[in-house]
Image (cartoon, rainbow, N blue to C red; front, side, top):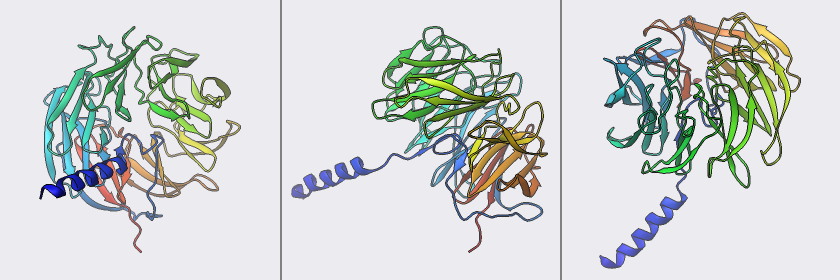
Length: 404
């Protein structure tokens, strides 16, 4: 038996080294709203795709669910407290963990989506509690508080960051003048670095990572600035200040082929930035003030940037190269994601639309989300051939697989 121990240990070591880390997070693999699912329905029945199951009881909130290969995680507010719920794919509640007070002022409830890395779940409460949970049983691994531990400054709608992970680091933005952005060891909760960044309050933006051969950049918004930090040490690389004083910045930027795109409201619009080969410099290429989405996101599909306007509530397509509006569609305002060649647009008033983008924007199918409570703000999620929709206290799961 002893002779078997060394070979077994060796096999386990090789397996652990070769095993690829699985990350499931806000708006898909690249946080760009594009899901890699295929063989999805190209149109829906009049009353919508088949509802597989729903669960009413996840509390108030606007945070999207995060779906892995075998579990679903979503946060909600119950009795003024933040809760994290875990379900299996059939809708059975596996566990529920309370972890902080919650936001009970304007638009009460959760804000952000959990980030799941292998068997660990990372969440941020609206009141600034950052927690790492064991995905199997909901036990707390570690936690810090952005306000108590880092003198953070909360926003007027509560912290809304979906936490970002790179390797063994997890990042968040307390927004203090000195402790502006923080990196912790995601396994232990120990501090790796603290950056002053711009010293501004945090925005509502969930950051992204841009990878380069010599370093990676964390790109996110603070109150009035878009900026990039070196993920190794928190060093500021560049800053792109906003022209107006809008402080929401609820959308994650999108990086594609050396270009960075972002959209925001309050007079800033949609912008294309060119990054230098090493990511150290930026140049503004164009700006479109008409596409002014605040929190519904944009997607890039077929060389078009597509999203809904805030002031003029139309779905708009912008030419990626010129920045000009080339198409629009009267479907209101809401969130947009993309999968298998089609756009999914969840209207803030309840309709969920399936839309083709080529050659023109055109609604294929539409149905109304009736279950749930309060606003239709949470971004839908596509995983395992299913469409996941959160509305307030309800989580609804639809089968959108195409029958072969």
